[in-house]
Image (cartoon, rainbow, N blue to C red; front, side, top):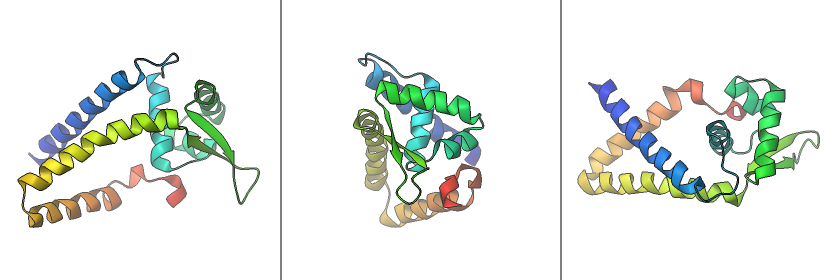
Length: 149
């Protein structure tokens, strides 16, 4: 039963994500492919990874990832920034063009969070918050940012 409920919540968030993807990129001259959207999402979640970190996590070759990142740079969604401590290191940074989309996507999560806080007691919300934190921090080690290791 828990598995079914988690899948339902996850599916609902995916549906919201898909709606935002189509709505956000529909007017763009150069739309993103699904793979490019996923790459941008991982760059966002990993907070400015290197191409190497991104390719390792995604399980693709570094030349393949470099090609995809260069496409995102050309389309104006990603910038390459030289590392502060190591000038040979290049970090990936999302531009405002993508961050606006990310802001729109986060709005639905905020809406659902507000509804949860309205519907349930503070104790229930605190309990849910602790459970979700444990799931994210301890029970999903495969999804950790490589820079945090």
